[in-house]
Amino acid sequence: MSASSDRFPFIWLEALPAEVLADLAAGRQPASLGRRCEEGALPPQEVAGWALRLLASGVAERWSLPYAMIDERGAIVGACGFKGAPCLGLVEIGYGVAPLRRGRGIAAAAVRLLLEEAVIRGGARRVLARINPDNAASSRVADKLGFVRGEVALDDDGEPLAQWLWPPSTDFAHDGEAP
Image (cartoon, rainbow, N blue to C red; front, side, top):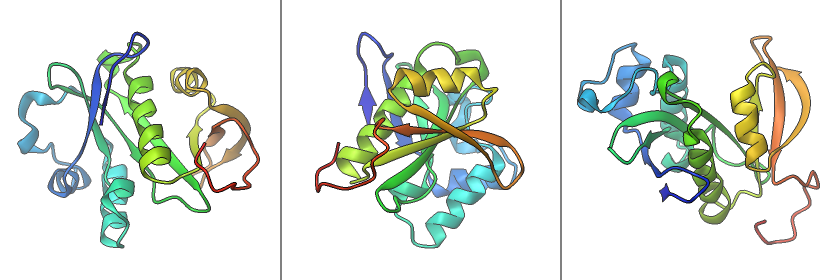
């Protein structure tokens, strides 16, 4: 998946292979990525472990493997992905960009690609991003792409997370067509 426009930088998404996720889940830097990866660009250990468990349970790679955000130079500058297959037409996403590359539109470009993958190719009707209300940068990304903020709920660890839904309609009735 790749995208570029006047509003977004050129970025493409490439699924991270299971062997890279196994290294991350074990707390190791994947040697196979070499110097292509910017500091803080890869998913954290718990995300890699979650992805491997999803894959092992039979969830399709599209919905279980995180994607590396790759810039025009071929550097991995962040990661994003789905948190499982759609359920009742709804799929959840997550994303993060290397600290030194934040504020350049990379996350917005990547999330735009995830939206296309989810709805156009994946058949999802709604996309959810759960964002800590103190994370202004991630909230700006969601707002920029037309997500609408809903209520704040506590996750399993007690962290408050605002529920951002795309497209903005809260009507979950399905008319047989993707938005």
